[in-house]
Length: 101
Image 1 (cartoon, rainbow, N blue to C red):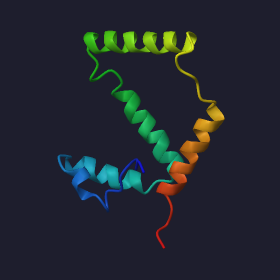
Image 2 (image 1 turned 60 degrees about the vertical axis):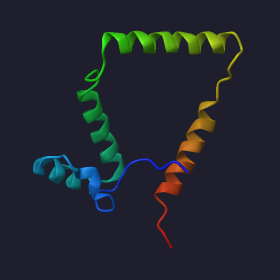
Image 3 (image 1 turned 45 degrees about the vertical axis):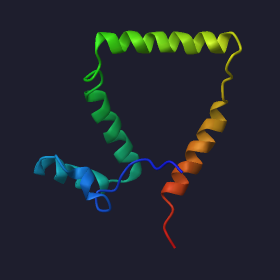
């Protein structure tokens, strides 16, 4: 099963390379309720959007998107209803957040 995310207390190696300030912020963020952690993560990701992008990478993604749209429009691939996708994501998240017995 795919596992998403990390818990600093169980995977301290994930904090290596961070400044003490970043480590402390991470620990504080992990103490927030899930909804607030999600909002924080979105804000942080938005703040670095494009940081790793290059014109070449952007062009390659544009080609990949165009190929996928064409494949879909020509019937070579099928879409998945959003309700099915969200149900799978919820099930994965429920599995991840299960309290061990």
